[in-house]
Image 1 (cartoon, helix red, strand yellow):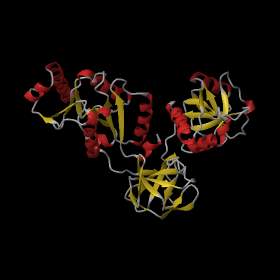
Image 2 (cartoon, rainbow, N blue to C red; image 1 turned 30 degrees about the vertical axis):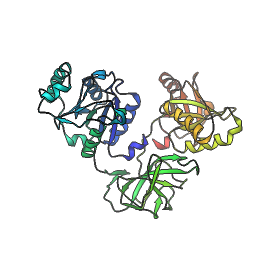
Image 3 (cartoon, rainbow, N blue to C red; image 1 turned 135 degrees about the horizontal axis):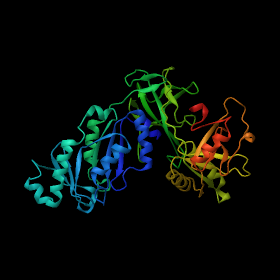
Length: 435
């Protein structure tokens, strides 16, 4: 979610068989909030999949955004033969070949072109002609301004694992996506052409180099010019920092960055005081607040079965929690301080466990729980008094990393029941100081 705050356009990948999944909807809400352009790639078209019109209808109805197919699939699943490029009037043929190579596109004058008839069976071409006519007649019209506003999504079809349709997507992405945009500092929009350097930290990655246990803070440059060795102000603390170790990363490859401009992403090494959401700037009046916040929906206890590696376990836990993807809670009055991990999706637990094992040599055990919702307590100006609360069965109290009290619920009904029985306090989806 936080990565989406640093981009100027986003790519939404949809499984041609499964359609829009729950995590996609959450990510889409971040894009909608920022109004950034969204490009859609319908993947796995070479496998049995839903009808393309059904997928378009789901995009428009579920996500409430108009969809314009830039290309259109020829066939479905086992009969998938390629895509038709509507703008270039070209057929791109699909073949499963080693290395993901593909045939050059074939220009056609129409679907009666002998080239098409020779390559594609008439049982596929005839319905395709009707579908294209329908798109041209009643489908959404192409409007670049609506794309830039995030109101219209260009849709591409293909098969990523076979490297088919990907280049078509990338070419149009570069052509249609937005330039770097302004970002809010309070009520003021800081435009990218402002001379003062500024940016915000949107991601922390621990243990990038296992040999050194380094930690990289990724910064989106929002305005001005970044120069290596420059001095900036850490807005949260007011302290000055020299940015001498700046990198550009691609997988395991690193390159030193000497200069960067608005829209660029740089990795800063060796600054443990930087955290997600922090602003680095040359101007005292710039403080960004770009981080989207979502209440956790998945909870699991993290156990360390091997007490002999407790030092590695604790080191890995502390480092990974700094990244902010997963947070740790501790049940109130629990006899043993077992971390309760809280995340938006269950996949984050699998990643957390794998990284503890592979990067820190600790082998934890994940124990799922029945809780599905978390709320912070707002005492409405009164002194916190947990003993005064009436807790229904299955509901528990816990403390977050700042010792703020939260309530864990197994279902929505108990949230409403808790509110009825504890009218003196309030429940918030975010810490009261961060609403």
